[in-house]
Image 1 (cartoon, rainbow, N blue to C red):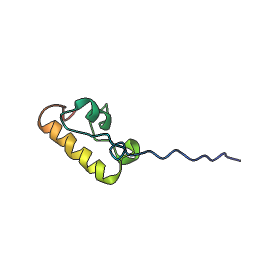
Image 2: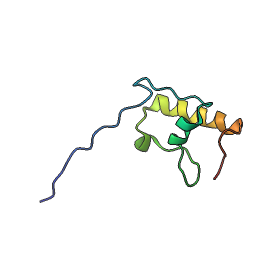
Image 3: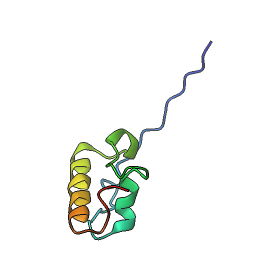
Length: 72
């Protein structure tokens, strides 16, 4: 018989008080994949839908300002 366990629910870091800004490259890199530079989905980052949209816009701002590359 298979053992089932519950995975701990991820908490949105921005709801907990952490802010994401396009000028803070170290924080933005946590929300981007390492191999292709794509924005990571909600199921991996654990953010809520409101803050995932905010992260997406901040990543796009940082790409446009050439703080992070579009592709690796």
